[in-house]
Image (cartoon, rainbow, N blue to C red; front, side):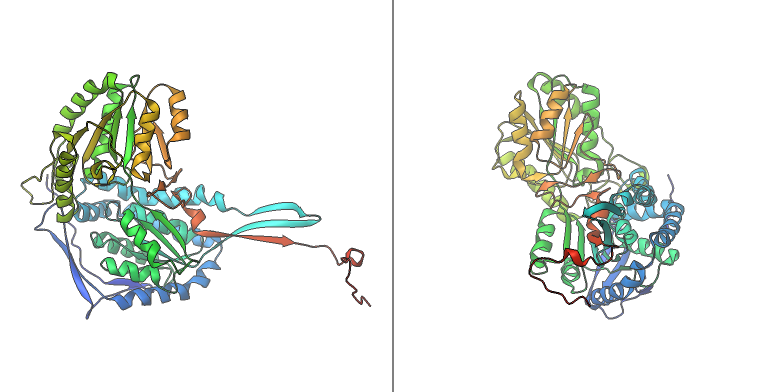
Length: 505
């Protein structure tokens, strides 16, 4: 299959409506495709002062943008949607080169960008509609309005480098906030391409800004005095660091979505074909690099042997390769991710888990960070096991057995994370038990853990988030409610409070 590669040229940071190249910077990093180490996507110099300049630009642009009507801001976003839609194939290719995702998966992500605008404008905005309360006090009308917060710093992840930041940026903008976006240093080309589309959409200068940088740049951005809110998707460790770095900035809203150690429970009455297929997708899509991926499967003993054997045989046949080959699985994001993945194979074995399918690095035609899927059988549940409670962010799944649903729920809740759980069973009573007992923000019935709807909230409990769900609910953390009492009645001197003596001449 021949694919025409669109050239990507470094343009600089996007500040105050234009690209500002870095000539004498504080350093640089190379954006090398994880799918082909000979593919240097671009070299990115960075300048820390640009972060401050972008925040100042966003602050200056804020009031003018906030004072526009929702319909006026809607016009800009609809133009942006048209551009997202018309550039979807190019965006997909940049995503594939930056992440290694197969074309089909990257195209799904690219097409979600315009769809997010539709859903936000047509549905999510309803969550922050003005509400009037007759007689909030006697003869006084009450009004609830939602106003924008100010400058929102959006810190993006590598696994969905366009879709996940977009899920923060669109609601922030329609609500009247301005944005400074820092993409992951693993996926700077996607960030730059997003900025190019914003440039074409001709937003007012300073409304959307992009700054590139390594990890320290994110710290500088979130701590900037002009930033009023931080919208983050990524690992628990980085989310915790953001929380620590802004501890004294108590006025800043933090929306932290921070990964998972998600479990699927397959009971003895489950539709086996569906449970196996959905669990394969849940465990291995995006090479396991989704916060919502399935990393633990808890099986009822009656179906455990059949499920495990069929799951194993199917996992062995999953195609792995370069994004142009449209395989099921691409590579891990970098060498450190491969090393971590291999290290956890050893940790699992050391902690008495049986290796049914060993994960190893692959040497393919395109030299990249490819690995095989892996499966470990957990002989004994141990809540203190490093392997059983750590997020690996690779294509590994641990398989447990239990015929006690309460014990299964205990396993689900044991990792400290609380993002997604899936239950495969025809028994609705079990599902209702899980809704009560599973400490998760998303619970799917006869549907795998990954793949979510922008029409629903997305967020987790425990180490998975801080009770600021994204997706449909993102508009809520992008606004602050303002309560008003509106009194149209004339002054009534007969209602002066006791002890007051006003001269009403």
